[in-house]
Amino acid sequence: YLGFGLLGIWLASLQIMLDKGQELDWFGSKMIVWCAVIATAGFIAFIVRELVTVHPIVDLRILKNRNFAIGNVLMLLIGALLYATIAILPLFMQNLLHYTALAAGMAMTPFGIGAFTATIIVGRIAGHISNRVLIIISCLLFGYSSFALGNINLQVAPANLLWPIIISGVGASSMYVPVATSAMGTLSQEQMGNAAGIFNLMRNIGGSIGIAAITTLVTRQAQASQANLVWHMSKFNFNFQQQLAHIQTALASTTGNWAAAKKSLAVLYNILQQQSSLLSYVYGFRFCVLVCLVCAALAFLFKKINKPTGPVAAH
Image 1 (tube, one colour):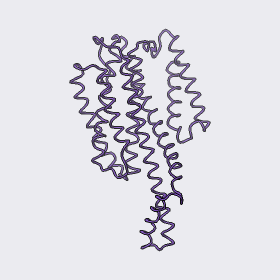
Image 2 (cartoon, one colour; image 1 turned 45 degrees about the horizontal axis):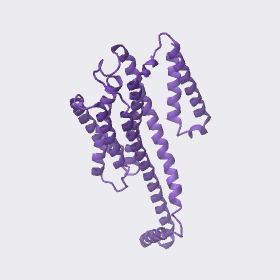
Image 3 (spheres, one colour; image 1 turned 180 degrees about the vertical axis):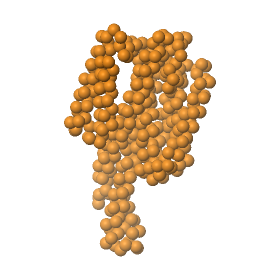
């Protein structure tokens, strides 16, 4: 019961910290600091308890297996990638492309179609292609989709989002089977139950970290981008003055010169906010590309599996 209690304290504190971190300004909040301290203490105590007890609730010694340890790191990163993408893409559609919640949900449907298709394909070819090759291809596919999404603008048509979303679904879904096979293929039958629990826990923790990280990145980057773009809104900037004059001329015919001068600044400020938000999402997607490359590199560290010793845990 002690091990279970320490596990609960660690995960609960970590989850609260990740959920409320951005809202409470992370370590600028005493609550987040205390959650971090409790989570760290709970994690260390849990590790020590499980290593010294005769009958641990989670046998951490299994992490001595190289393939399983690498597989858990990969699953942590894959969970972060998947949940981060699912979190920010609908927000991008609603906040900047002005999709309704229903339209944004429908626009994400191709992700599920791609994931379903990939599951069927990977199941058929998994025995004929190296797991490392499958993992690398999957990571590169997901990375390509993130790169494509990182090059969109506010005039993007729904059709231009279709293929990147489909490819991201294919990449995300096709990662699980080869990673799980590589991670657990060198374990004994008796270790499978314990290994499956740790493996799935890593995916869930990765998802929480991914959502918290991408939300913080997008929010902070929007503020930084706005601060950088404001420097270009100056009377010494010819392009800014030219654009301001065009907007004033267009508004003057309906509102008069005095009102047009005020409204034109409001229009430009609205454009500034939109472009700042767009840049923040672009940085978010490009960060996902970097994580995909890290995942692809980690795949090279797997030892080759000659023959599986037991079934692979479901995902």
